[in-house]
Image 1: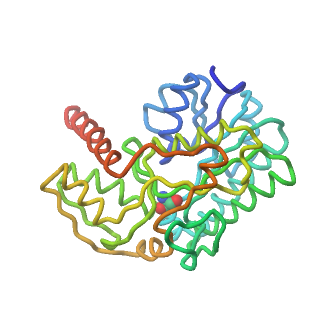
Image 2 (image 1 turned 90 degrees about the vertical axis):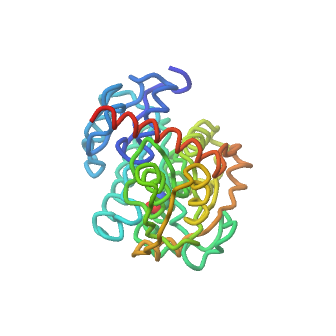
Amino acid sequence: MSSTKGKILVLGAAGQIGTDLVLSLREKHGNENVIASDIKEPISEVLDNGPFELIDVLNEERIDEIFLNYNISEVYHLAALLSATAEKLMDKAWHINMQGLLNILNVVKEKNHIKLFWPSSIAVFGPDTPKKNTPQHTITEPTTIYGITKLAGERLCEYYHDNHGVDVRSIRFPGLISYKAPPGGGTTDYAVSIFHEALKQEYYKCYLRSESTLPMMYMPDAIKSMVGIMSASPDQVKIRSSYNVSGMSFSPAEIALVIKKIIPGFTIEYQPDYRQKIADSWPQSIDDNRARADWGWLPDYSTDSMAAEMITELSKTIKKEASTL
Ligand code: SER
């Protein structure tokens, strides 16, 4: 095993970030050293190639049991409901997003030397936040239930660091784009579905307006940011609520044009739904100077390089699926 002494636990391994993260951590640290866990089974690539534990993050005893069974030194707590689902299932979102985090913080508090990663989101910002180059410290008055849970989560993380010495590290993710994990209830997920539909039928009906610019990031950059903040020395991580990070920004019309350059027959139509209001409350671009200065954050991908890779990789998956039918 390379850089960590004990094993790494990923809670939420069947989700959007978890799927990619487990595969990447296993490549780096060895399959047996990364324990994937979720309330449901992950994709077979994750399930078949290393340890998997069924865990409900609301069950603190079960989490404790995992810590007793394995020598864990790092935890990635990714289990949460995303913004669009959370608006539909408010009580469930509150419970999973808040109690889940509290349970992990309490378990980790009792142990020494465990590093904890928890993802926050651009959803902590609200309609009154400056929309362009949104600073690290600014108005945070979210109007979505998801954003409210993320903001409260950030405050909890800082509180547990300051009062209980928990080495928790966090990043405010923008919309994440991956060809491995399927989209899962986020407002920004159109930016994943658009690639699937462009390849399958050269057409996409978008639930956001054409000009709705949002901050986005390609999953390899998101993984790079998590590995970056988790490998930093504790004194480099000066913000213990959550760091702004930035990758790229685009609107549905802009990403449609980029796709059209590669798939010329692609067309898009717009039929905004309840997710438009969520998108309207979020920033368009993010100032990530603090992450760059404190622990050396630097993204690798532009919109063009992300789109080219998404189309290449998804084409392979779609071809493979077609040949097994
Ligand atoms: N991708 C997330 C969502 O749309 C934002 O953190 O819910």
